[in-house]
Image 1 (cartoon, rainbow, N blue to C red):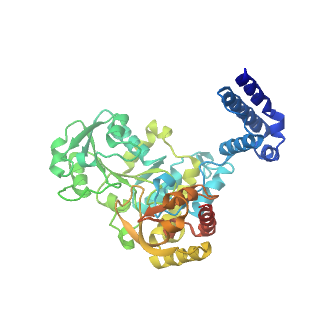
Image 2 (image 1 turned 90 degrees about the vertical axis):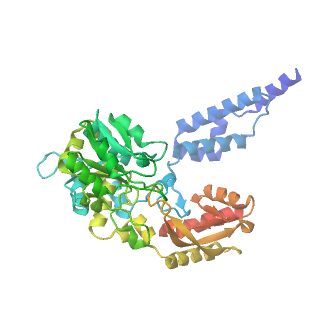
Length: 465
């Protein structure tokens, strides 16, 4: 009887929905999130409290209920994904959205999303047009290709190319290139979905052009070369040069498709990095189609780009799958703006990825020292370290950098892991790197206009510790 009386008392202590909604925090929330949502969340909070009481718990305080409701409403209506400052020093960070967009790309996407556009309308002729025409002329100029098509990502580009050119037939791939491209998506699986049949040749570490030649039959539709953009293979290895495979394909009347992954338009060796085949070089070497991403070394939005021989590109454009994987208007606008920066010769200046790659350690050191002064905490240092390219681009390649170092002794509660966690929960979340018992913040991957926010978030996190 006593337990039943206690439970009944706990139920009676619960406030009504109207009383909860009268709390100042929820009154303000109603103005921004709407009455219906806040009311629903209040009712749900009371339902949870009643279930907890039935299980033997006491009645929560009204302030606790209000805080819970406010937190849940904020979680529902806050913009997602959230803006994050990347201080980890990984230029193309897959988990943080890969390449950040240039100002021109952002403005182009905003402009085209604000109203109507000539997405598929020819203003000259006053009739239906093609969304492919917008980036095609720029890609032709930049790569020397006969034609181009853009879809929503590079996996879609591979899927479409194989479905259009090789459905029901064989595609030859080296065993050393039968790779996983991220998120457990594997080249063999993509081939299966396209309707093509995979014919693997060679061994994991050594494949010769003769292996491809011996595998060609009347049922062979294409040779597929997959660039190892997300891992490196060293030691006792052998891989045919792209021009050798292209020559073999042309001799046998079979197209050679080269999946470049990143698709660089600039010479990476100029920046002290390993040479990455450019798209133009790939086509010059004889590839019939080159396929690559828009949001890696290109530095644009998520997109899959295919350039090459017009007759093959036309087959891709006509295939029913092309509609299912087509690029949307905002990404198309952002991509076109990004390509325009290359055409103008301003990639280093305007495209964040290339601005980051081309930044010198001296420039980065000045920014790191500015952060140090702004935080105003003793024990912080500026150290020499390295930045990674990341994102399935130039595996293992790094660039020298200067980073702000926060030793574990200065990090506060929880040491380096505790500080990293508090930074992730700061007013503007910051993602950092932990190495050698210190938290490192690398200016290379922090936008110049984010310096102030980073210092504020770092102060919050250090004080919170």
